[in-house]
Image 1: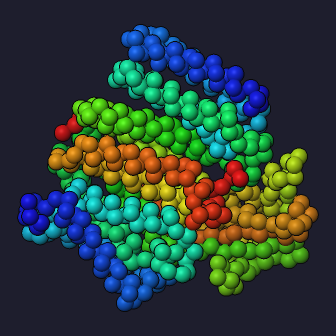
Image 2: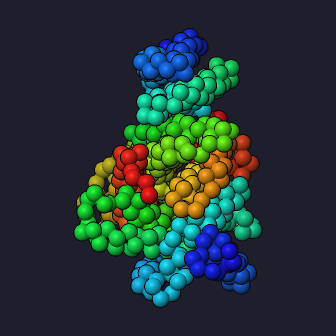
Length: 257
Length: 300
């Protein structure tokens, strides 16, 4: 399996996800589940095939992490849908996944076979996969926040909280796995490397949201805006630092260039 | 509502954090940046004890001193976290070289250090409050709040990591086949006599088809003054532990590649590590609880 087959798998998956999203709108729950799960299966089989043919987990380059993200978005969407039955959530997650699929089709980044020794660790896969899942959940929370801001409706905020709680739980696990790995690979668990600094910023900003929501006298709309800001900071941590002058050539977290 | 009318809320919280940053700024101007080397043992032990005492005293006096009660609330915690995030964003946007202006050395910038110290104090007060209210219900499992694991874990990890940093030693040792090396260089280029010597037996290098390294490792002989020499293989991602030191594969002669006659090892001693890991594992446990219980908790 190689990258050139990606478009075929992706198109089938996206068609299935779209069918699932459409079924959800029409209230056909069973079809929505089946189609979305089918799309996930197709997409995941590509990831597994890449894993086998690369002889390493496809987690190193930005393109490869986007692969996981496009997989986890409909997955998170399906979780939210199964729990709270929002009609629109599968459409949103599908749309987001399509954006990342398109980036990977039109602007794929180097996908070579090599994996440098620093990345050959049992921590590698859990660290990145857990992070990608956290990003997908927090992406779903962001979509809900946008939707609620637009609809001027704050009543479903507890559902947003649930997404943030689970997303933040995964982000914490991803971050701490990263620090335990860093100790094994680089000799120290935390060195304020630009990636780590931005991971701390992102983590703290979501903690602010959670604590702010606990205040009896808080403004729900401000909480939603806060969530959007958190997601902007998360982008900085994920890929923004690759373009940040202060992080250029100083981060030990640059593998794709 | 006027400022400082009880109960205090977010504005008072922002005011307190802002005042602390001003104090930090003054300290920066008067005494200069924070000298972390000063915190080497036993100073860090004394400071840790003083911090714990301070938190206990503040908690004990919370009913007579309103400010101490306030410091442990959401209304104080949120502004402090906002300041911490803002200062960390400054750190993330500037190049941290350790020299130049304070912008390039946030870790020694007093306002940054003091705000994080305030985060630690708040965490300590929250932990005491949570433990007390849990004790009030006889430590019933059903009444356990996973945030306690987060608060305590973060408190332990951040205080011991910060204070223990001055006791951490990271040195590089260039080893060769000719004779055992007993000296190592620290980050400033000072030579240190080590309690262990290392001799390179074999440098191992495997490459991919394009020539980029697939694996590089050192087969070494570790010597101490008392015990018998031991053999070990140090791989990237697989450090070897001996006598309180962890030995890492750091580098090699990249000009020579697989024929490199030397290997560069990094030796790290971090006596406070078990405490930091205790905090990290507590937070991990908290995160797992948060994932399992997150969606099911009752809301007030």
